[in-house]
Length: 123
Image 1 (tube, rainbow, N blue to C red):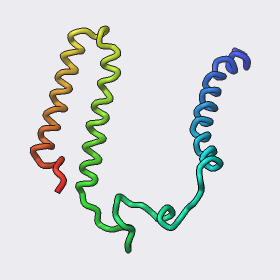
Image 2: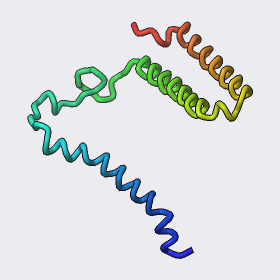
Image 3: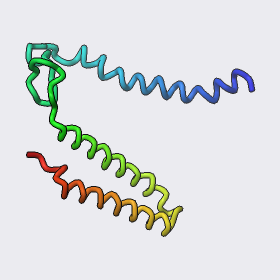
Image 4: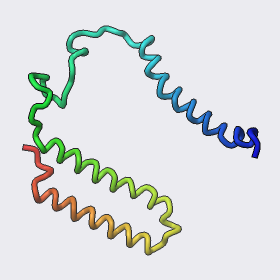
């Protein structure tokens, strides 16, 4: 295994990383030249969860913000399991289908529990 072999194997990965960095940096650089730059006090002010910035940054935040965020992350991650399952459904057959139905039932029970507990209600 020579250096040319490693270069041939890792060159596509290096090109991919360069393209990804370029695609991420290009919009940032282009907006500096294309977009109209007129910052005012409102644009330069800090924005925190819809609240006006005041006093101490360690103010008490209602736990419902965190609860809704955690529920969103949980259900979002659980639904992400549906995509790979759908891709291999023809390979895993009926057993895989039944397993996913059971998984979705457990997810549905958790959703109903959160709903009944009032976790999804915003007062």
